[in-house]
Image (cartoon, rainbow, N blue to C red; front, side):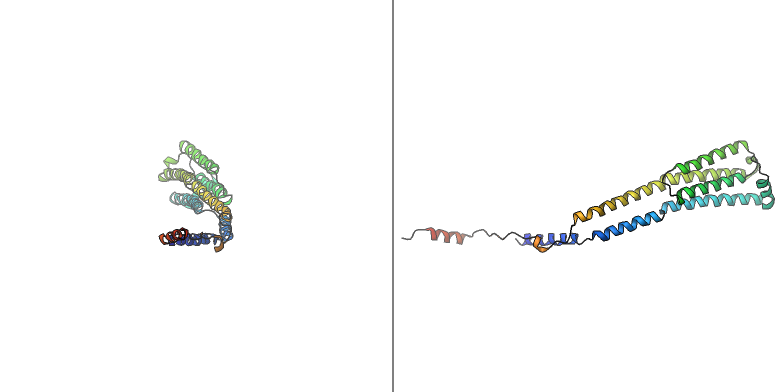
Length: 227
């Protein structure tokens, strides 16, 4: 009997603890989390934007080194920019890096797109342009930079595509599903725990003690006829 009383007390304590959960504060935490997600970008998307920036800076650095090695920056800028020649200039590879940076930052940092079509366009344009330029131009006869700039630009464009398609978009979809599950839990919380429970709502049935042998004998004695 003591075990029944103790288990009843434990169940009352457990339900009282569950009922003490405040659904309002839980919903407030969920709403604050949703507001934070809407105002800022995710960590993995921020890393992607940093890599896009690195792409532009790295191609720019290689182009500046190529200008300096080929005879001086002012003279080579005049030759490659003002007197642009598709077959011999590296200026278009730099412009291609600027195009990737502007398009991807606008699509995935400013507009916060969750689709791969923007990076598909930039990667397709980069790949087609570099392949045609390598075939038709005379870059391969201009030393190491004739190989280095097209190859690095091609590789960086495809790394950006892989990172977005296999890291950024799946991770954000998983975070969104987790947020929806938490929000669904917060909506069901008031139904599960309507309010505090009082001790009067739980009671134990009256204790029933089996008749002892002495009580049975006394009953038999009273039932015997008096002689």
